[in-house]
Length: 377
Image (tube, rainbow, N blue to C red):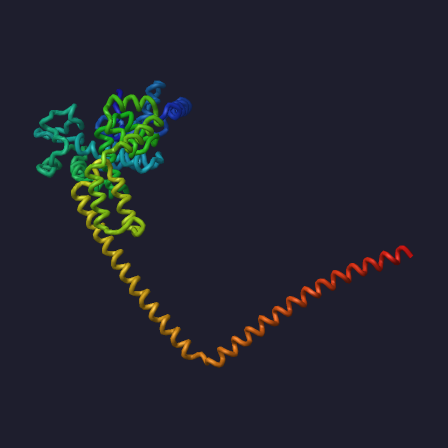
């Protein structure tokens, strides 16, 4: 019996040719040491082991995923331990995993039968449309699901927002939105390059705005060509709403660039990272609140600093007046006289030191002459 790769497994990047060949060599020598895991009649974990065994005509041990194990959590845990990927690559992978739960999760039809996990393999009337509200009838379907279908978990996961996904995975909401756009608009080759960290998620998002034909050509040209095209896309990005809202936020802070506090610089940096369209209405409202608060904090801080400086000036003026009043005028005149005498003594000292230096030089010359005369005698 042959198996297909489960979509939750396919969300992870494939092995490179050299790595796969090493795996085949190992299996040819010692066989498949770790059984593959099946879920819904497909390979959930161990796809490359299975393919290598098939190519070699060797047996491949297999186990079914336990009914009480969540396939989503299982496949994440298995791959987290094996792969060291960037945040952007993991965000794209996780976006694809969540997309499977919202679109292709197993469903139970009216007859109580677990249908195929994908719309193209199931009766369309039994599968909700992408983005549909999944709350109605969820409890009824959960009661009827077959063992191992994990339907209730899938329904719960499908309800999560981008912010909730970001929080659960340790990403920013913006990163999750970028990942969803790449998943929606980029061709599979661009997605795989992102998952393998050949290109960044930001570059993939920029390329996803191009036509499919241009994406195919760039994918064939390689990562360097993709990065170059992404850079050009970013430079050509229209300003529009994003630039207008940035200007408004700058004005809301009411401070010249040279006086920006760290919070305002962080805010504007965040705006730069918001992508082609800039912030949406909710994000913009939130950023505007931050801008207003930043201005208030800086103005309050400036007032506090000015008041502190005024207090310090007053204190120094009082201290100076007290010192002037405490000084004896006669003592000041005596100090000046002593300073003048000291300067005169320093002049005499310098003259004596110069005279002493000249005498030393003359003594050295006389000694040399005296030695020369004795030698001749």
